[in-house]
Length: 211
Image (cartoon, rainbow, N blue to C red; front, side):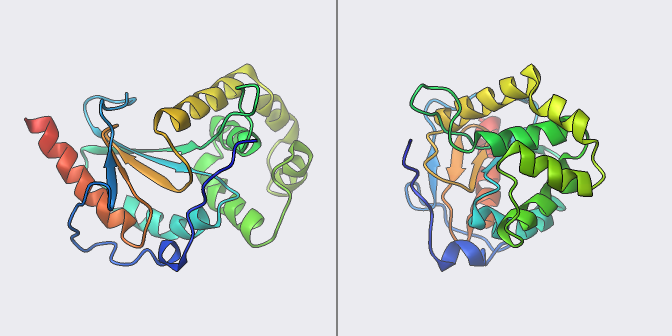
């Protein structure tokens, strides 16, 4: 089983200075990808959040992230990727069930609707949402068609998306979450000013595109 480097400390929980300007320091508060990684869109700047429902830091980031998304510039597109790391056989291992949960609900139209509830259920209520049985029991109480969920959860389409999420997690060299990448060019290093750094990196990516 791959050992994951966890991002710890009170700073990651605070997420202060979200709207303030920051000085970008490569290797200090961001890293550069050279060459840039491929993105899903070309006409806008893509910001990708890599997360895991079992991550308390992702849970604490989510409310601030929701506020941040409300002021997202029109030339920026946001997407979520539930991070996955490979097992010893090279197939999706750690966090695969949580990734499949996200993609299955997203396919059913419940992705954003239940995203915050899932975080709360796992982080606060300690609900079992890492096994399919636990997922079905919890989702049934939320009014989700559990038979449709199980079929979607086990589908080839969801398995393919989980595999793709693992490939992206590897391509971006992730060793923990939350992680925010910008335009396939940069990644904000987690810390109290993570979202402010992401804003600055969006400006930087915008200038890069204009060159």
